[in-house]
Image (cartoon, rainbow, N blue to C red; front, side, top):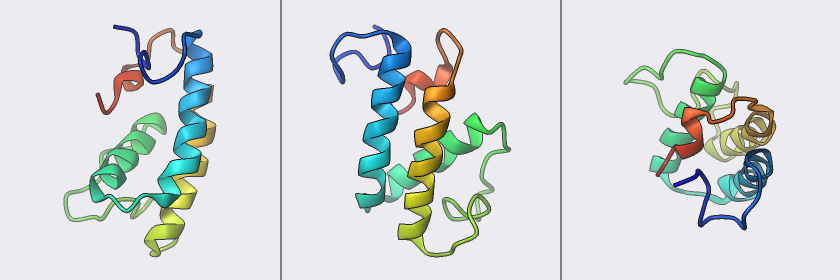
Length: 99
């Protein structure tokens, strides 16, 4: 099944990515879910071609200068809001991330 199907109305892949980035930008700062933080950290690291987060580090540690989790979530949302629409691959492995 195509990525994002069932989440958004039928569209082309770049439009779906833009819609996903918009949702993430709005919802992530409101989240209080540590699993979402882990997934988001992993997604940012993958899109930026960074190594995986070391086991002893909290999500977002080393990605953003703040130790404040709400601020880190806000920064993560802004970063993903920029990175996701800029993916140019026809099908990127991260389009199915979280399924």
